[in-house]
Length: 80
Image 1 (cartoon, rainbow, N blue to C red):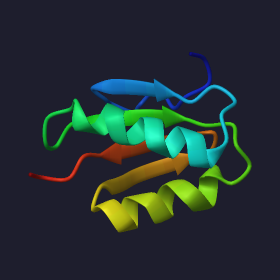
Image 2 (cartoon, one colour; image 1 turned 180 degrees about the vertical axis):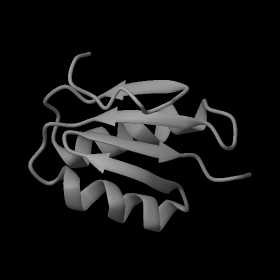
Image 3 (cartoon, rainbow, N blue to C red; image 1 turned 30 degrees about the vertical axis):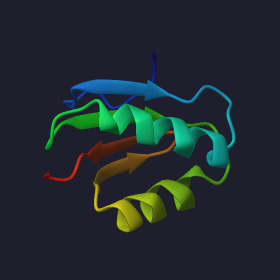
Image 4 (cartoon, rainbow, N blue to C red; image 1 turned 90 degrees about the vertical axis):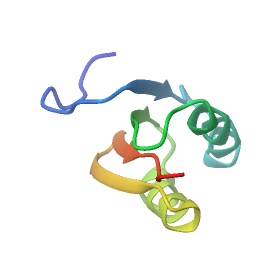
């Protein structure tokens, strides 16, 4: 995947391709469930709503948005 910030360090990549936010948030829940607490995932989303939806999803779920450079988002999974 090209174009993401090269200084980011992450454990997993989730590329939502061109899925809408509603669909990719459901898939992202499954991706996060498979990760250990504290793991970092780099999310790629080309959906126009992602810059609003991903931070809101993080606030609702307790995950931490570390950085955002749309279409890329860096999220740390919450502790247990």
